Image (cartoon, rainbow, N blue to C red; front, side):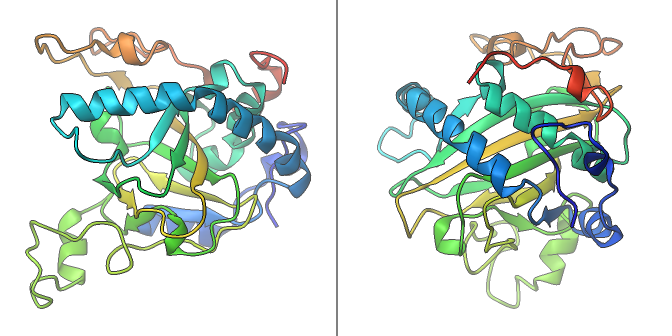
Length: 294
């Protein structure tokens, strides 16, 4: 079994190549799962720190979500989730987890070195709305197709009622392929109005045990249904892209925040510029000092 290690992210086992079927699954469908990627010992050691950090930031995350909903004229609706941005900057466990996922990210992208784009913690509580279909690269100010996100549930997610990520397979290559393969018109569904993430539409990898990690391409359509069972779902994510991607110049919109306002590590500029984000490989990951002690 392929397994990574939080204690020594550059050890021999972390350099292992993912099974061919996993690489092929990702290439064909735009998403895959690595079972037992994080050992139970590492999971038990670091997940409590992530829970504590997410809990400390939950009020700020709720205020941010309310602000976004208000700006979009949706004050009467529940947000789809509460998001804490870039916990790796302050929480050593989040930083170690982002490093520990490097080898698998590099293998799936077919790259030797990648840049860390962003980490997040996502609370999805009962009563939160569904997470609508979206593509990560639509909001990333970088010009690349080589982008991947690891999604790590911080507890068991046993079924679709516990809100795993759902994917529209193959949409990282061609959205029309999915529309035709599902025969939406024969089902009486307008192809321009696909149903939201839920039991009727979308692929998922549940049940997910502690230590399982799902991966999705930056252009794959994905979302999540509401939590219908349990007290909520907490997940950690880390996104990476292959070194060499170019920064997209910001669009001039009045009163819109700049990229540097919402993503401090990214400095947009001319297309010839590279983003100033951490450049990482499995070989040099062990040399990266954590931001602080747990």
